[in-house]
Image (cartoon, rainbow, N blue to C red):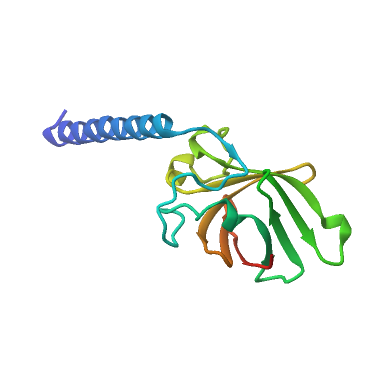
Length: 167
């Protein structure tokens, strides 16, 4: 082998070992601090702010209630403290569906749960898992939340949903 080839293989080996070490230490830190799903709660460790990817939403009282879509005034999503969620569409009773929601640790969800989005890239983000009998499971990242506004990203699809609290 030439000197350039040896140097190239040495750099690749260093990158692989370093990357493996980084992944292992990040996964260990995530699993050490994870408390598992918390049905009906949004966050137990809020640090404030509006960027929920770095700072989880305020608290249950702020999340609970009925939220009207800013993009389609007929669509509402209602979160209750008991962990139930209801999606409704005004004028179409068949579109109303109730299910459950929980804050989840992305690293503890099944492989492929987020489509092409890696679970590791969601670490530190508040991730909501909504489970409906007909629609199935949907994951949302909480981008921001105040007492009157909520912004969610549908993980895997990238759709951004914005809501205003109506009650």
